[in-house]
Image (tube, rainbow, N blue to C red; front, side):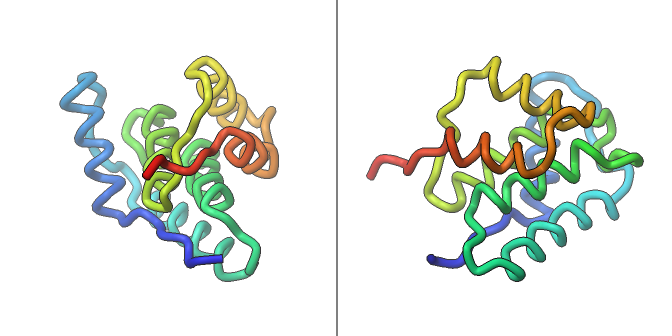
Length: 133
């Protein structure tokens, strides 16, 4: 399997800026350690498991951003967590092919603790497709 490509800290900040410009949500990173931790968690997941996929990496980042007790995103913006997962998949030539309602329900479940990281990986893997050439 080819190496999994992860977004950078700057990419995540760009996503937050885009949300601010598009939707008027609060922009900014309150706690950089949360964002760094999410990226480090994804790096660990990929490095520790030769079978790790982009879905595993995206889920690791999204899960950490949704579950952090000290939200790194200024509004604990779950849309940003979903977009970061989406971008992680896109960086790896994949796209999330899920209904918006299903994706929203899944991210809300991660945030409230009713959906585990493993279940998030399963959701992403089941709803991820290769980008057309």
